[in-house]
Amino acid sequence: MTYPQTEVIEIVNRAVPLQLDNSKNENQEVLRRYHHIWTPDVRILDSDGSQLCEWQGYLPPAEFAARALAAFGQAYLRLRRFDKAEACYIECLRRYPTSWAAPEAQYYLGVARYRSDPESNELLHQWSILRSRYPNSEMRLKQSFKEMPEEPH
Amino acid sequence: MIAWQNTLEKALETAKSQSKLVFFDTFNPG
Image 1 (cartoon, rainbow over the protein chains, first blue to last red):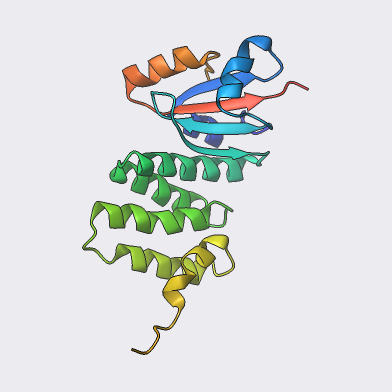
Image 2: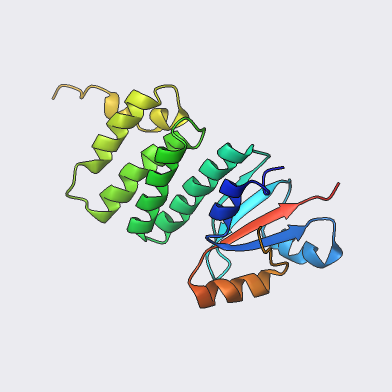
């Protein structure tokens, strides 16, 4: 079980925790609205109910905690609250540097800093760290266009 | 412990009043 773990509880409680049982009739309307299909099913919503991030499937506690931090980062990034997004990604990378969510946190840390200050070199700097630390990750692939040599003019 | 809310409406209301996100988990008891 993932939720009894202290590190998970502390992170989940940073938001308003909502849990629905998908076998209960009274929950079907809400679950249809969110196109629910599989459990475990986690969504991060804003206070209007708009979905900002999601994932499905079991994760052990440390991976769950890392994924939740990256998900909060993604949610704040979409809300353009760049300082909060940055804090989530940094915490994910510091506490869970070898997690499956860490490459995503590294990628989007660059995006958050770039969106916060387009004049900074943080996007390329963070993506350089991504290539170094997570060379076999999907997120490395997603920035690989920056690795291609420029065509001669 | 996690003090789960069990309706979307109440969770959104709380999120609005506390300027928080909602962590929405769906499970199957089986």
